[in-house]
Length: 280
Image (tube, rainbow, N blue to C red; front, side, top):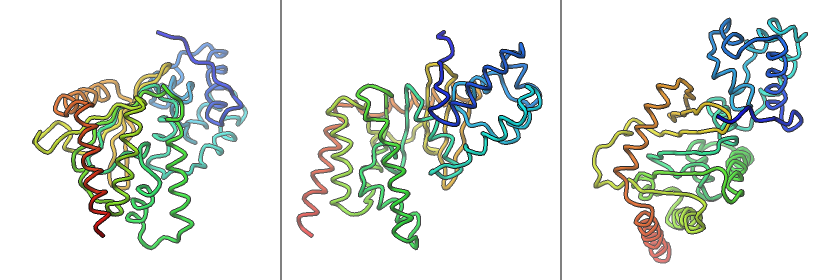
């Protein structure tokens, strides 16, 4: 197993806290499990804090200051972590996503945020907040497109997505928006940047009918699972739970059509939207 990644403390408040937590814990002669025990946190969770995968909460910062004699260091710097451009229920997952080496996602309703085109993202947020002023929608769209910048690296992270056929058929923003959105996904597939499979309606019932699922693996921390809900989300690190959701994802991919067949279907549906847009 690789050793702990060396974080650049200047790169982010989370990296700063993680590096300092590891330094002070080791100086105190405590294992990760021993540090986490008074807060009922697992050793793996402490490892995720130290590697910058998980976000430190204020109650944790207070306890770390007390246990490690940090003179308020963690509380003071934890304040910076409260600022996020993402909704509270998703902020920690988005930040973990940016550090993942592998991301696997099942999307039952919408094109995942990392793969959304600008017009598609705008249409989604407008449906979510029909009375919001344009500047609010602009900020949400900007944050979503910023997330997608992790795909600007040609190989990292490895992204494998299963799209339910409903994602292709659900009209978000009209035929022109849908055509552009699907062609954006197809272009990333043709560039070999992402792996995409479509779970067709013909597959019938399947293992992930309960909702969206995202699995994230890291080079220096245990994996995480994120369960997506309506205005809510749950980030899980329990090994048995994450392993169970890993099996769920494997079962979904087994029911999906191949990447090559998926690309053909995505481009065919995009062409149908093109024809429809031309008739309007």
